[in-house]
Length: 129
Image (tube, rainbow, N blue to C red; front, side, top):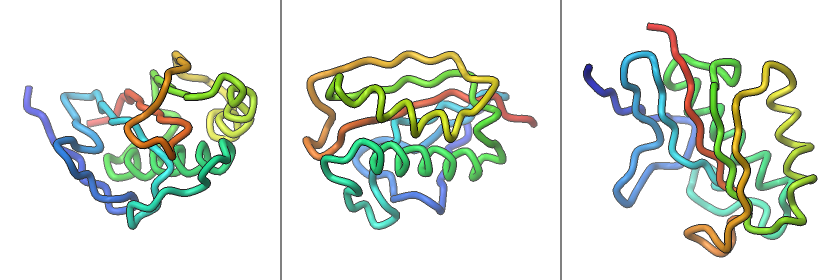
């Protein structure tokens, strides 16, 4: 199988040795999405609701670039840096995933690559040929 690099137009440019997504066959592997706007600026410093919303908007943008939607997501991995943010994150997450939830793992870790980020969301989706 060949792999296709997905370069979304609706999210910030991927820099530093990664791509936002790679498609192999019918599977789309999406790199962790964080609270960065199109210009790469951090959104919602200190606010889990704002950061979760931006990260999920970025996830949608990557999916759309590959011809997919949130309904095509089969797995998410969520990384939070503060356990106290789980409930706030879940409220936003459930606005995007309101039924037919994907398999998911949520983990609390010490930090992400920038101390300004509170959450990172990666996903796997099944896309139609």
